[in-house]
Image (cartoon, rainbow, N blue to C red):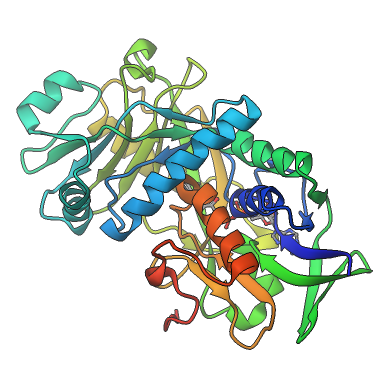
Length: 376
Ligand SMILES: Cc1cc2nc3c(=O)[nH]c(=O)nc-3n(C[C@H](O)[C@H](O)[C@H](O)COP(=O)(O)OP(=O)(O)OC[C@H]3O[C@@H](n4cnc5c(N)ncnc54)[C@H](O)[C@@H]3O)c2cc1C
């Protein structure tokens, strides 16, 4: 055996799983097809939003609270600032599923928040224009994460604890059997006890039998200049998610003091072949988000000055898949985070480590079960 465990894909989930596995003292190898902290998949673009009043469902709240504790722990171990809590604004129709989920999360878990009606919202947050049918909810435990630094921090911390990570090593094949798993990279073969697949949007390439369960989808991030950038500094401007019928505008405060992230993340298009991701941003895509910014964010100048393209693995119900893959002995999957996984990466890494090392986890992940019926 070359190691007890191999983690394939060192992005958000892979780096955290490596960190957690190495901490538990097991011998672990990591394989990443690009460099660590690369922006070729789901983990680039300067910031990721952290929210606890969760529009994707209240069942995530305990995971998010545990994730926050682990973000803090990783910060303490590495000395890097990864998660900044500066609040989060959820804006939209109070009768929408998203905002109902936010309110249910708040009520069930007694989350620190404020419901801000339109008149007050436009005074407190003049960065936004609101419609009379909307409401603003301030999640006081929300904020932003630095994604590239987070992946690098977890991977290096894993190496500090004994993990060995192979960079620029794409795994081409996984061959499981009753006693372990053989994996193949660059013509070289490794033999390990168990494998954890954390390949995100690329999963269907490595595991074609999961093609009907996980799709790669393309997301475009955009940044805009401001009329007065001070209005958009983290102390004055929380992260936000603004839901309307035709778009979902999400964003973060300025982190470099020159531009503000505001992107349309609604209905990302399928990427048939992840290796051929189109990283060009079309004029139509730019115009769509520019029109939304012009209408809804009067403090921004609606000509984007930066745009970049990423992709994530999506499932049919937008919940990820976690567990041992049926009919693939000793092979575990953690994938399909459907555009909202980064914030929970440390707790998912810990859960993956629990499942692989102990065969069970104390965390509630029933909604993410690998065996559920999921077909596109
Ligand atoms: C534009 C965008 C914005 C987002 N915004 C947010 C947000 O605000 N908040 C939030 O919580 N989440 C957000 N997400 C979602 C979050 O970033 C993802 O859910 C999360 O990064 C998924 O982690 P992952 O480990 O599954 O995939 P990734 O982070 O993409 O990592 C997969 C890694 O596997 C590697 N790999 C693939 N195949 C192989 C192979 N065969 N061999 C070796 N290595 C391989 C890839 O190179 C990559 O490094 C966003 C996603 C995108 C794309």
